[in-house]
Image (cartoon, rainbow, N blue to C red; front, side):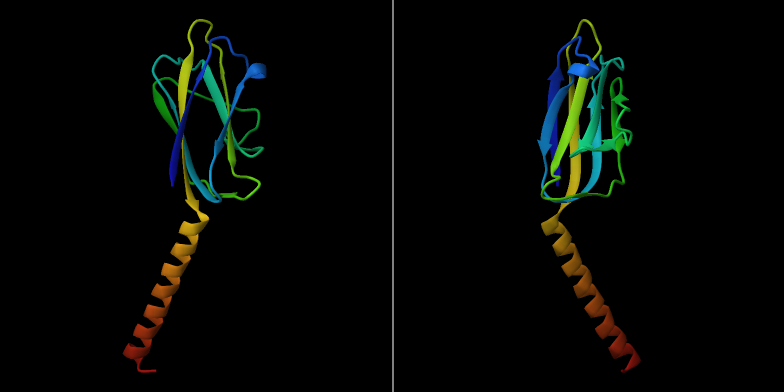
Length: 139
């Protein structure tokens, strides 16, 4: 599943007055997060993303991500999304003294329903291979 959000943060927003955007996602496994910084951000618009209160990008709670006309990927994530941990907290601030900036967040995750379906398919494949081996070996 994919979901996307965007947020505009005003000029002169300090880290201590950062915007906190709550991005609801369903239970499952978080796979990847992408943050897009449009041209003009000049590394002045900054952010970090938490799954609940655990840092996801960057993995340091005090670090931040910034960019200029770039998409910053965080792939190969395997964070469990549970009932009481199903919100991405996107913290955004803007040190540009003149202009607001709009950032974009894209999240990809595998829902619990998709995980169950994948397990069922793998089980069916395993049964099919076992039956094929029985036929070929004759046991």
